[in-house]
Amino acid sequence: MSLLGALDKPTSGDVVVNGVSLAGMPDGKLTEYRRRDIGFVFQQFNLIPNLSAMDNVMLPMEFAGMRRAERRQRATELLEQVQLDPEKQVRRINRLSGGEQQRVAIARALANEPKLILADEPTGNLDEQTGDHIIELLSSLSRDHTTTILVVTHDNALANKTDRRFRLQQGRLTEEPPRALV
Image 1 (tube, rainbow, N blue to C red):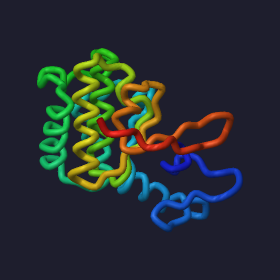
Image 2: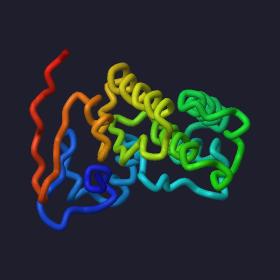
Image 3: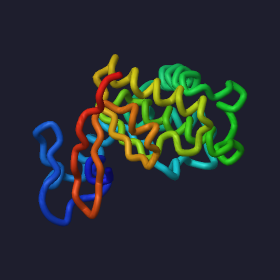
Image 4: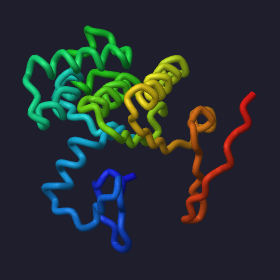
C-alpha cells in the first residue's frame, strides 16, 4: 500500500498507476499525486492529536487550496456520513475513542474526493454496526463516484463483501476465484 500511495519508492522494479510510473516521478509530483488522487486510512490513524476532528478532516482540503468555508462545509458532511456526533467533531483527537478516531481518519481520507482509497483495516477499531455503516459508505463511493478502494484486512467478513479478493502468502499475490452468488 505504501508503494501504491507513493509513500515509499521501490528498491527495484516499477509501480505504474493509470499508465504513469511512480518510480521516476519527482517528489513534488508525488506529493501532488497523493494530494489529488489518494485517500489514506492508516491502521494507526495518523491524525494530528492537538487538532480537533473537524480540523483533521479539513487539513487535506487546505493543502489542496479549498476555501475555508467550503472546507468546513465538506468536513461537516463527511463527519456526519461517518456518524461522528456533532459535539465530538470539535473535540481534540486525543479526547476521542479509538473507534471515533477511526471514523475521523475515514472522513479525512474522503476529503479531496480521491480516485483511490488505500485502507488498512478500516473497520478494525469499530463496533459491528459502525463497521457495517463504514463498509456501506465505502461501497457506495466505489459505485457512485468510481472511486477504487483497496482494503487490506484480516477480517474475512469484510473481505467477503468486496468485489475482488487477493491473498498475499509467502511474498506472492494471488487472486482468489470469484464467489458464487447466492
